Every structure is written in structure tokens, then in C-alpha cells.
Length: 417
Image (cartoon, rainbow, N blue to C red; front, side):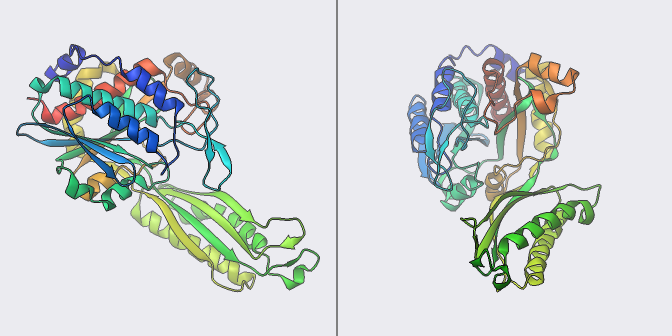
């Protein structure tokens, strides 16, 4: 067993605070950009440790800096916003919150993506490193990021002077709980998470009474034609050996039954691994929408608003080579190879801002019996809750142990004496 594995398995550090912290965070989620209570809770927890807290950065973001003499610097990031999802897990600490959603209507709010677990794990890493300063040297930077779900948080922290307000790290780390056998730590080098863009498209029309369609230019009809045409984009313009997704998330048009509206709105979500494919897909979307507007004699050009950009997660080979042997020593058979996935993250904006390499990994959080039965019966798509579902809830004990130990192991792989 490696020195780091021995330290983590015999540290003697009291981490009993993690469970009540996790349950509190889970019961009190907040939507992106509104995480005041969560940020305050994190700040209160950090008061237990010998660290410098720098806040706010980028809204409700916080950074805790642990200095322990000369040596490398390592940054570890956890996100902490929730989702507009009504929870149906039925656990005693389930969220019952209602808050105004992005469109103003009241919605349930839930930690349906595991960000409460991410914070709990990073706070455990802080506790371990604070208590065992004899085992490491250098600087540990714990970054708590808001607004990951809307793709704005990482860039907001960067825009608020992150790189000038905290020590420059030599390497950055992050992790995410995902469906999989609870406690398995999944790593890989190279592209792992897809890049993503969201696009809000406004299609102009000419309004008229529903009884006189000949006097209108119907934006709903144009939007419908765009939706149909977009379905052929990936199948006919993207190399079958490559990957892309174009999904229409919303289509809004009109407010009553007998008036053709003056405009329609489409919101798209696109994903890809290749920069060249991204360029082609975005160019094709603009071509298709513009052509349909011309075909229907729309009174003006459509408008395109790009938002919620997520960088591709592209793990550094050398960092992977440094960390993976430590994971193998700490987790044994539960240190496994990750698989490329089409989900997206904004984590990569942080190491990119510093100009340093990074490693981002996933940790399985599905009860093992449930996962193994679903695999055996070929029912993963139906029998395993996934992130953003109202029933998503990590299996606490194996997941919190794995995420805490993985975070500490990665950091110590650079800072251990």
C-alpha cells in the first residue's frame, strides 16, 4: 500500500460532520445565481480550519487557501447550485422548497445533480489536510463555485479576478458523482465530457387574426420547419465516426388560440467533442434557420443568442499518470477506467484561466445491488436514476467516502511529503 493510501486509511481525522452537512445542503438547495444561504453555510464550515477565505468571487463563490510552507500549489473545485426539479426521493431530508424558476413560475428546487455531495467531499478534504499538516507541504486551494448548472459560475469567478486573488495552482482537480457502482472512482486521460452550447433563436413573423392567416407570416410554422430540419443535421452533416447532439429544449410561440403571434423562440442545446464539428454544427444551424425564414418571407433576420457555454473536459495525460497510480493504491479494484460521456461541465474554464493542466473524474453513486441488477437485466435506462431526475440520490456512505478520499488522494499526489 502506498504512503498516501496508508495515510487516508489510518488518518484518524473525525469526519462525522459530513453527514449533517450533506443533509442540510440537500434539504436547502438554491438555484443558480441565488446561492446566498449555501455560500454562508460553506463560509461557516470553513471557520473550523486554519485557512484564508477569499469571498465573494463571482457572485457567491468562495476560495479557501491552506498554506503549509514551501511546495507545489493544488486547486480543487466543488460546485454548489441546485436545479428547478421537484424532489420525489421521499427521504427525511428531502427538499420541499419552491422558488421562482428562470421563467418566473414557481418550481420545486432540488440537489438533483449531486452538488451537495461535491461540497461535502471537498469540506472533508479540507478537514483531512488541515488536521494532517505533517503529511504535506505547499498550498492547497479549495474553490467552491456557484452557478454550474447554467454554465455561468466558472467564468463569473474568472471575470471577478480569480487568477489575481488566489495563489496560482500548478494543477487543478474536480470530480462529479454519476450513475455507477457506488464508490467506484472512474478516471481517464483525454476528452471525457463534451463541449456544449445553448442557443436562443428568435424568429420574426407578422401577427394576424387566426381567421386571416394570409395576412400573417406565421413564426410558429417557421419554427416547426426548423425543428424538423434540425433533426437531419447530425444524421446528414456530421461524420458518422464523430459525435454531435442537437436538441430542441423549448419552443415558445403565441399566447392564445386565435392569434398568429409576431415571433417564436427556440432554445437549442448542442454537444460535441471536436472543435471542427462544433464550427460546422453551429454554422449549419444558422444556415437552416435563416433559410426557413427566407422561405416563409419573414419580415427580418432571425437572431441568435449563445449562452451556457461549456468547455470540453480534456484530461491531461501527465496529470492522469501522476494521480491514477495513487487512486489504484487507495481504491484497489474500485479504481476503474472512465468512459467518454456526452454530459457537460464548466470546470475547464478555471484551469484554462490559470493556464495549468487538470484532471476531472467521476465517482459512481448508485447502490451497488441496484446497479448490478440493472446491468444484468439490461435495464440501465429504466432502473437507475440519473442526474437531473427527481429520484436522483447518491448512496451516501460509499459515495462520500470515495469522493472525500479521491479528492484528498489527488491533492496529496502532488503535495505529500
